Image 1: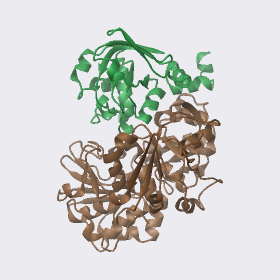
Image 2 (image 1 turned 90 degrees about the vertical axis):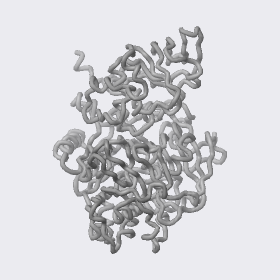
Image 3 (image 1 turned 90 degrees about the horizontal axis):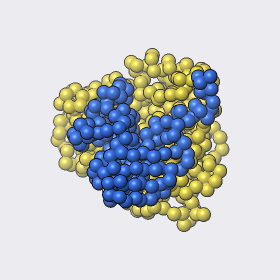
Image 4 (image 1 turned 135 degrees about the vertical axis):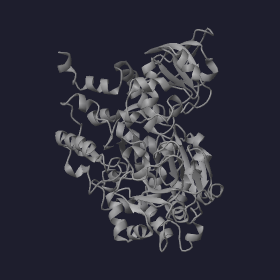
Length: 174
Length: 423
């Protein structure tokens, strides 16, 4: 399970409402196209102008923290833009499981802020536990992501994996 | 291996010793959902079935009022199709918040792993169990009976002393947030120490409720006589308390003297903006709310009633009270607490989340420029109505006293007969 792209690095804790401001309440609307037009708009107006599919958002400890009411928009909005994943020095424990459950790659890479600079090109192999910084020509290892998580991400989310495990899709694909 | 409570509970459920950082598909003992939970694969695949209908609890809490017909019908049909027993569906008459009712009704046992869809699912950790928020993974948990989790590192917080009279779990959790949030974020919290015994179950539930606000995975209280008394006559099965082993490995050990806690206020607009009550005293309020999963319990209502006894809510303030559950409403009625609140000029609503979240068409919808003092869980802009309204969070005594005064005030002058709520 590899993710690769340009890094958008934020040194601070990136809260759920930094990813999509809480003044937009998309859980009532689930209009992810419109939601995607507000990603990081308060923290970094440059982001929306220059983000490209595959780009990664990198932040400090406690990434995604906040009221879970704002979690879904915090990974659906960026995902709609093609954001490839989140890497951080640490995640809010409920946010990270929710995002993975929705199929959004994210994981803790200790010291990531020391290793990548804003706009570096990187490749992260979650299953192997490596980050390669192509811009700096360096690489770093971290504890590989467990198979249980890789299975969810490769299936595209926990619902998709559950459907497969229970054979619920057998009729649909026949 | 010497284990923490977290490790013991998860190891028992998983059938193997677990360590922090390990990823588990851990079997759960039950799942609680509320009326706005997504049903995901159950909507997409009509043939999908929950793993054990007897272990699913459905609570109508967010939409106890005007949205009831559409939201509730969806879950009535879900329960019918899935064979979830009627006694597990907490509909009007029995309704209450999804992370309160399963404890009241004996579905949650010490030593177990319990999943709750809602953000504040960790609340039930007051019952010496590993209770956590399953959020959007809930449909999968319902289908498989297992939850994907990462075993958290654990911080032990040893409590000493007692809370001062008139202070509640609101003040304690704001104190934790302002002093310790960076040390508990991303981790689990286990309480210990002599100070635990002085916290009632209502206060413990209020403390565990704050896990999400603290950024913690969950909060676990130890088992003791207070919990045993609460569980008596409620539990649906036998149980054993879980205690940490001597020498268990904690990421950090912290000691906290409850006597150091003072009246604190959070907000506006930012949960982390926490200040002594004195710094915001005098600010006029247009609305006051007592309720939510943070502080809609019997002791919270009782504390407010003790402030309001023989007094009137200021005519410039609309004061709404929402009991957390039908059980709490019944008990508050039997004890005359509701009568005191109503006589003072509060509007008491059906049990549930009440005005905490504007999306539930709360009776308190805040308008532009209004200011509210509330016991609820969030003061994010727009949470209770207009994004241009201010929400200050505080304890029930402060909310009730402020409703009387028409401005944020200390309840000290109203609490002369109080003996504290932690007893």
